[in-house]
Length: 181
Image (cartoon, rainbow, N blue to C red; front, top):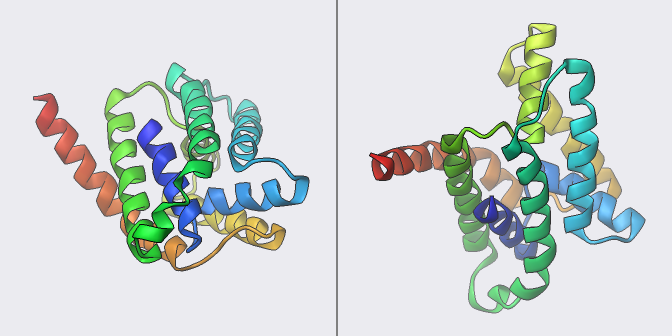
């Protein structure tokens, strides 16, 4: 979860576009004048409330996901801007996405409960008998749109994330499975 949060942080400091949910977190943070880590935490808690009508139960990993990712973002973003002096924003976007993907693979193998957003996605899919791809797209589109309206950063890094996250998670799952055996 730390790697996931660090990857999110690198995407933020790249100023090149961020993940869909971070577009929302940035927008909320700007509107209410709080840090992005705190905004991420609050949004995760709100998403967890939406689990109640879906009759979902959080696991230890779900709660740790909320806390660790938000704390990591809040604690690391202020100290990472120096990376912009060393690396190209496109490289930072790929690297941040890779870290999110690698962290996701480790998290998924641990099987300690879904993150709040994944739980919401699978819960809605099951409850309303809708394809996971449609539910995922709809949720991500909605949060990006709202986040963008609030002033969140939508850019080339967001596209890099959308295209590369699936392959990076798949690669991470293979690596972690090989290391585990």
